[in-house]
Image (cartoon, rainbow, N blue to C red; front, side):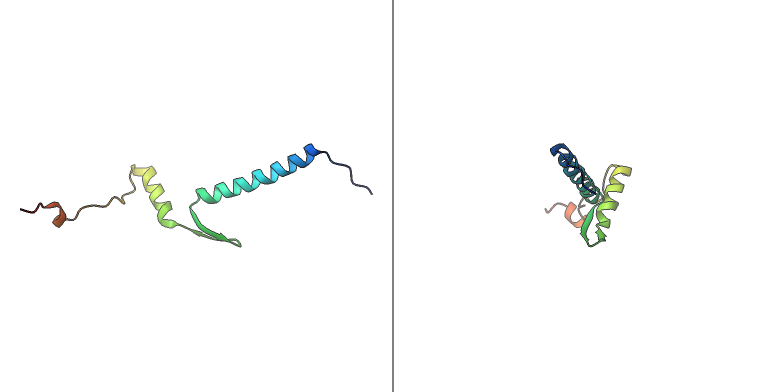
Length: 76
């Protein structure tokens, strides 16, 4: 049994396919707000996910610093 010879186009198609799949996995990992991914253990940034969902629903994340009552009064 003998292997068939391959051309440069076949090799290029294989490399592009592998890089495309790897790029897709990296894009999904970045979009899902993962802090770390180590040997299949994925730690998500839950605060960032909640802030994103709140931003989509209300238009604000609700994390804007607010002045306390003491800071709003002016000094004489």
